[in-house]
Image (cartoon, rainbow, N blue to C red; front, side):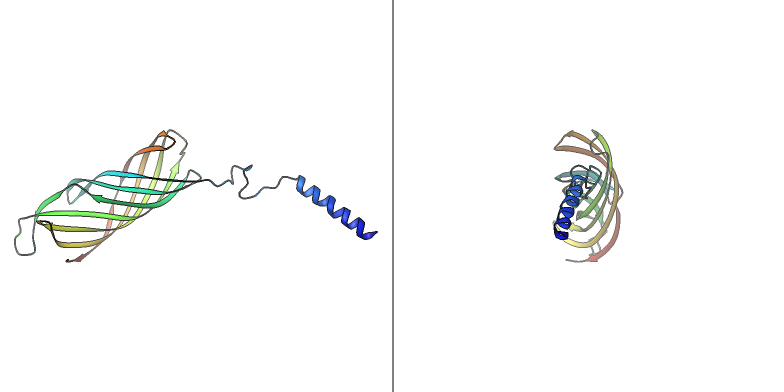
Length: 182
């Protein structure tokens, strides 16, 4: 008899537990705790100033977006315009025509303000490693490894669900300049 009462009591308490609403971390009913993930990638075209001269860099950026607020991923870019200057060719000639080349790659983190709005802001921080080299007549004469910290601000435009364009302003702080000769 005691066994039957215990079993019936357990069954009824289980029914009462299931009838109550349970909140979980990944519940679709609780929008505040619901995690969403997205991804993106695309080309990157920038104007930049290197060696007191303006140039054009082209590259790419891609990553993961969490809850339409946080993004992280990879970034890479390379100077595609010619950056010519007069300098020392290390053979004693101080007015030789030289060309500067520059390329970087690394990771980024970004906080996005109100991504669902047609026009919104984001704050990216890029951490990159790169290389700058100097050529004379298409032959490397000098090269340096660089580490780059680049914070910025983006003004982003949602043209469609799958096309978001941005106008960016950033500051590049370069560390290193570890010189090596090829």
